[in-house]
Length: 342
Image 1 (cartoon, one colour):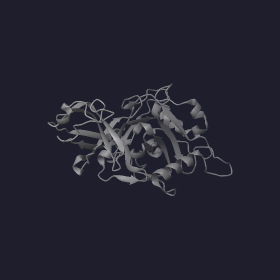
Image 2: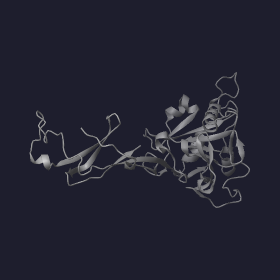
Image 3: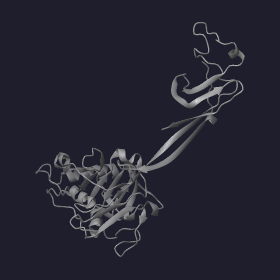
């Protein structure tokens, strides 16, 4: 068996950024929201609740949780230890994941906060990251359909210097839809959020997570988390009801995914004098190794169906199949492009 070594000019690397729908229903928007009573009422329900797109669905779309640095809004683990509860655990986990410092609080806009609502998207949904400018999330008072609502998006279209943290890029949440800032009102500053209570939270696209600032949201609608110490405030259920509509018509939750697909293009060039013979039993005798037909000695004709890529130790590492056999003889040269996606 003979080999032809590939040169530098035979390799081309390409990278493409591809956006796609995020939710499992194959659409850009999620319009129905359901929880599982067994999970909500179980031990994990004290920390978070999972959200599904249909009643019978087994595909989690995202989850909801409430974090509080003081442990308020949930019952403590041990009555002898104050402040250690599911909400303090949630807060500490995101502190380590996002900030990387257990002594530093979150800063939404210019306001430091000791609490947040977390909406982590299911890992399989967002692939590599959330597509910037695709977010549109409407929140309203779950107790009254007529009490107003607020729709938020990310400010990626309005920043010149991207902020980074331990979890990657950080974008502020502002009033608006799908990357477009809403018309400025007396309540909002030119940044798209309130000056007194900060932004409406953070979008962390690289870990597929939305953090909502309860202080800013409560200035727009009557949605206030329970902050009483050693009390089960069922705060994840509150934000679920505010997004799902809680008996009223829900607003679509719009979000897209994004991933960068790198491709190696390898150009294989059989020259006129190369690869004109075969070891196939239809070409040579298996017992003697002689060419079966004399015309194949000086004027052979073969069909290329497969391209094999080998390493320096002559070990086969990849195989590419042609869409149709390619005729090859001394009068023909070929150019085969092999694409490897990873």
